[in-house]
Length: 487
Ligand SMILES: [Ca+2]
Image 1 (cartoon, rainbow, N blue to C red):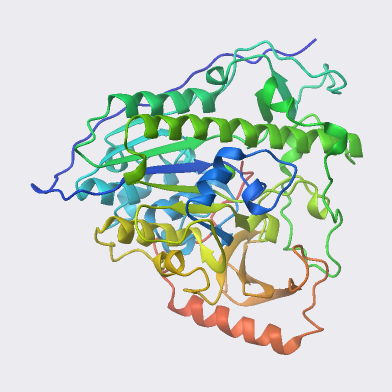
Image 2 (image 1 turned 90 degrees about the vertical axis):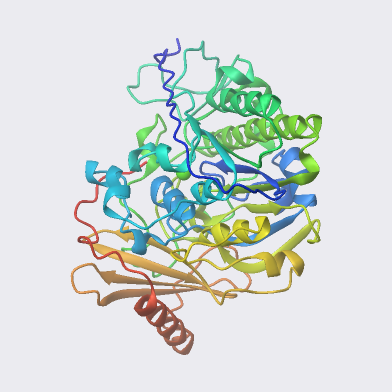
């Protein structure tokens, strides 16, 4: 028998006006798509097994950043960094536990959020679903003219596909399952419908910032059955390398292993690894279909040609790479995200750029594309030069960081060929460990090459040190006062 999950459709709604200039030029509308835990497992990123036709179509109309990296591989800090244009160190927000964090607006003054900046420049901003993580506050009064959350759980008969092995007596939740349901019975279909209803009723004379946040493919991998039916479990490819790199330090992986919260044996048998991958891909296809519906509505409404569409994942996820089914590290698979921008204007179409970029770069990029001012507090670089020429560069490296065991912060910089990770004491600020991974011909860390390439390590250490000395630093409190499990 399958366990029934309780119903709790929690929504938030609030409206707060901002001052708008009298004259508003014709600005592009914006469709802003956030996807939870989406790694670049998409057709347009070279995955030949996953089915993502709508996102692939979007990619063909704009620029796909093939080497885009999040600031921190966990929901709350990644999202709030993107939405403020400030790195986690500048915000002092690296975790998600502690009620003091939810009041960040009161303690961190002078910040204008991304959608707030558009509101101040003539836009109406609507947020639906998971944009911010609620554990760090939804910033409703500043960021949105209206905000509505998604559904937080399900009230559905669950149907495992034949052959799915779920231990019915386990107190843990299943990590993956298909449900007999229409799209809107699960959160992401529900949220897509909120966006579609808003679009249909929208007076297009005022520019629109429509933000839609999808919860999947975050664990558990749950989607309507028809999306599981797109895949043949036994034909799916497992992670290429399923063991940790040689000579890695104790700071490379988090103590918290996300998959352990679910009903999955350890070690995970290969057939279940394929089922997990199938569940993840089914969720990707489910989200992709919702995006397709919203884009169809934009076209029906006659808004499409004047709409800037941005799509990003908040961080990656390890589907068996390094033997892990989790995020919360600085590894390539946790740090790298899908990131696509398609905007009206003379920008390259179907461009795949290898330029190194960070999610914090989205804020100034969107402002420049819409012709509105970039707030002084933002730390990113506009990516417009890359959208005009995919061979252009705006960064030497992309920074990703994560707090690790024993009050440390691991900083990681990704350059063209290398990932250098340096762990510093939160108490003294001094480096206490370093790793260097050669990614010239690999897409995954295989061996800590710190001792093989001391000159390369030295050069990267100097780059990181120089950056950290000049970067914004939150001075309102200790870096990591308490670090508990995060989701
Ligand atoms: Ca996430």
